[in-house]
Length: 495
Image (cartoon, rainbow, N blue to C red; front, side, top):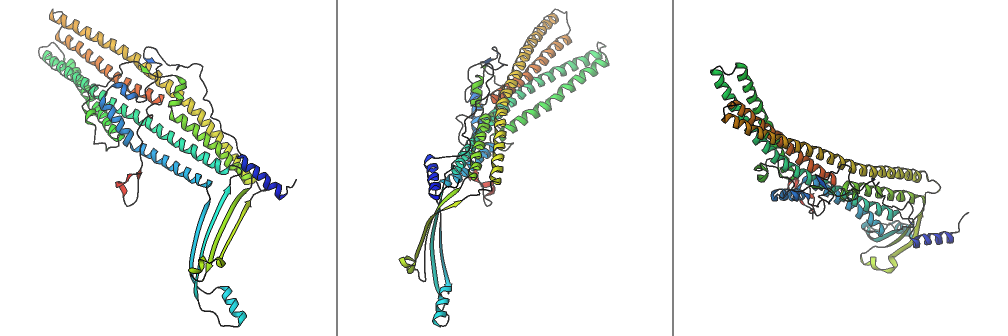
């Protein structure tokens, strides 16, 4: 059936008044709900279901750490790059939003010459060619696309979702920056403690070696005993450079995380000799709150929303595009003549464009957009499952290290008891001084193992907090640097 022009324009008017937008209407998908509200790896003795605070690093109650995290959230270069990506997405939204308004073009011209009309008039009158003279033009064109089928609206909808996805990506960087800054600080403190224990162990092994040498002089020890004691000294000394290197590496990482060159290390972290610990069980919250805290889940959901909106953008190509145009102009041989009514001209009217019946391109674009939306939905589901996996794995590792830490504490306490007994036996003549040094070495070895576990526990705590997704709420806004070729490294923050 062929519609008459009047009925066609009437139908288009109905669509315009109804605000029709082709393509599927987006609905936020619900994350798959696990069977229980609590995490599978949650243990009552080390964890609590209380929601973690936004600034979870303050649970360590270390002012220097709080200042470092705040500095990193304000100056970290990776975070500055994420802020620039967000600004870029906002620019794309502004560009898409411009489609809701008319586009205008203003033209003006000035020429010196002879027009074809003047030449033709001279020929008719049998006159010689006219002399060149000034010729001026002024024009204004305006056009507006009537968004009957929602192409512009869907484009704006997709651009808004892109902005929200970029904002979520920036928040994800904040989570990482806060976590890694805390981890670097805790590692620097923990490695300093391990280094101190290693130096204590080296002092004991050196004393044992000296005692063994003295005993060898009087025939109470063999050359084998001397070599073995010397090997223990060398082996213990070999651990010192590695621990010092790890400590320095953590300090360098901490400086870069706060937006500084590696050599500008934090003085507070440099003098820290003991990693702070949590005074209470680690708060985890529940599964449902996890998805609200994880920016990567929010980012995947917003990317899905943008993909669904772009289906509507492609589907709108199946329908005609109507553009309302207005043009006005004036031409005269003098500037004053431009404002005379007899030299003015104008035109008003609609322009309809339609690719029907050749819809192959539009069909291909819709299929491509639907496939992209399917992939975005799979990415969203993967992000949800990854959030659960990250959290369960982090909690499992933390619980395992907590159990190991308790066992090491018991071993250290037993070593201390054995050392005290060896001292008592030595006082009563029932044990040698070498036995006392050996027992003391066992204490130091247990302290070293416990110090290494302290470092692992601190790192696992940070991994849990990062998996839980907190740390981006309430963070300061970051402005990207404006770069120009002339300014180079002297770029200034964007306004």
